[in-house]
Image 1 (cartoon, rainbow, N blue to C red):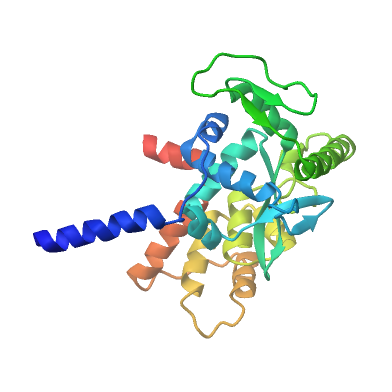
Image 2 (tube, rainbow, N blue to C red; image 1 turned 30 degrees about the vertical axis):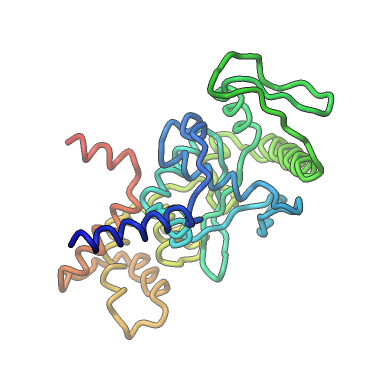
Length: 299
């Protein structure tokens, strides 16, 4: 690049940088809450969608089982904050284990999609533990935080206007419902985290297989749960079949064909080219649990 081209490119870059609005409001405390950079970024976006818009209306448009949910396909997570499928799955697992979010798989836009909602009681507890300094309210209410000295975070005046009141009321109702649900539906040996992602009860034997069949292959939740309970159905077997089936243009309903092969316990054919093998390996990488991946890296 010549000096003149370099100067021109630099000027264009500086103009673009100053004018671009392709940014994300990412608060560092979300990394502190999750203990992970990627999970913190994802939590930041989840919080954004759970907050009301400028008119005080909820940004969430999906309501199932008495809760409002955030529904995003994988390509939307990538478009919004450049998270890959593997990163989304890992971040979601971190937040689920900490009790920050609840997830469920419902149909959205014609395809099974993982829905997410904040578990506000847990989140607010973690938030109050991590937030330094002191917040003051201007409506004769006391701060929920203890006083602290932090030169980075000065006293902040937070106005509890009508939109935040509406959000608080909705969160309170959802929290009461969640407490009631956990009290009335929990059965011996099955915790709320053990229940199906679709919220239908019953323990999923193989979460990896279930998520792969539902999210990637479009298999109905009930059928995916049945297959996940079969001992002979593994993630490797399902991913191998799917990698082969994806290349067959004569198959109209690939999900149904996959289910038939898995139910009949058929062994898949050998890969015909490197593309199928690469696709198979990518499926394993995207859907294999974080613990398994850690074990492989350690070896």
